[in-house]
Image (cartoon, rainbow, N blue to C red; front, side, top):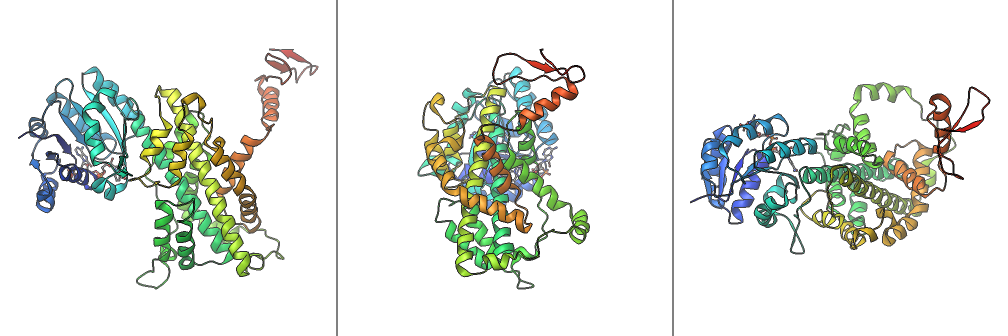
Length: 486
Ligand code: NBP
């Protein structure tokens, strides 16, 4: 019996994907550098489907039907290259190597190019949904050649999450496109979590709403246009009580957010493709600031808030009615900021598509984020509708889609009040405020960039263009200050 697919790398993600494949009727050949993981998997879950145990990569390759499909699920970075190097001499033209880890898209592009030259297909696959998703149905974002998807796609679609019966898996584009889209997914995830944190902080700091009560607020919000997995689990985390102290768990957890790098990559790539992903970048910076614990200990004791003593948040938001109004304002600010994060993420995909030669289908991408992944949200259905048109008729920015333009207009007064309150009372809300600034920047007729151009021309003769005639101009700042055509 030949296996349909081989999986090498059987830590939690690889093991769960292998089990998912086997549970769906595929025969899966198993391999791990240290055989103990292979044996542990077979012992605990060997009865879930057809598995073939292999002890070496050569045995793994030998056990596969052709074209061979080998899924690599090892630690991202050098281990992926090490496994590829060992695999290549064992494979034949047309075989497919799949990297389902969180690899950086540029590495995927490099590996794809090298392997294509050897007649092999290399498919970088973005897999979202964590351990649970890998086992029960993740959102899957495959890149690589279209031809490889013909062979691999049905398998991936079968094991993917389903939304109303539709698989959350579709071919994204060539070489690193799948890993790129997964990276942007993670960037949006960072922003999504940061705006939830800002909402929590503002409701507690200004209106005195404690975590357990906020669990109810988030649960209520999950019945609105904010409905999403992250809002749902926020309620769960906020109502969790610490077993030792009886305090809300969130009060005993160290307030220093970790990161594995995908948010940072998204922000860097945003800068590189010239796409202003401010909400994502601010979310990454917010985590960095949270991690500066030594510095924060000093600044906490030193920096004053500089708040007018006559201002009292309790007085302003203390009554039941005011609190209720404030909570609704925060909900709207959260929704608007979240829309900005999605708009920026999708804009970035368009810019990256142009840069790397991918024809990214935003409707399809929104569709496969609807289930299985961390940013799954009701909102994605509406995003799909916004992009349900030929490319040239699609909105130039998500916020231009009529349904979202209307939603933003409804949120705006509340959004401004919340950002103003955050500044007035000294509560940091970097994504709420930068998202509003992004919106206002897009909205304004004139930006102070004109002055920036003037300054650049003054100190570096960088020239400028005029609003009233064609051409490039320079003012002779150190001479008679007359203007010349450059
Ligand atoms: P890890 O990232 O912890 O990697 C452990 C695996 O890599 C083990 O199988 C280990 O073999 C193998 N490995 C290493 Br380390 N170096 C190797 C080498 N030089 N040659 C061969 N094998 C090597 O596993 P994971 O947590 O299951 O994650 C796998 C991938 O999935 C990663 O890219 C990760 O970032 C990604 N991931 C995604 C999600 C998600 O939500 N999508 C969640 C978690 C992880 P050994 O057993 O012999 O040490």
